[in-house]
Image: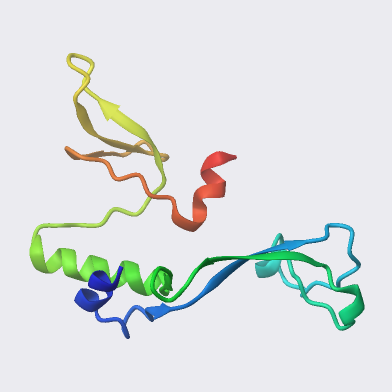
Length: 138
């Protein structure tokens, strides 16, 4: 990931290395959780009372040599900019992919069908949900 940050300009994508840990939290603890739609479903391990800590255990997941974070929108914008420099006729199509389109004759990939019925022709299909993966599963 460092090579990509160097190529796209780390500051433009807000690239930063960090450490990460998995925290096991007592599901029956009486911990007050931050409010707000953006934080729904996020587990919190904060307690004002040390003797009633809801943390059951902590396991390191990685350090600055293996983990980094970027601003997702800025990363996408910089990647698109780099693509346009290398592929002048590239274009972006915004929409929700409903499925792949294959030739009935030989099964060859022809492109993707969007939820509005539009067919986008192509010889490759990149499936990438990112933070919207939960929408794909449901």
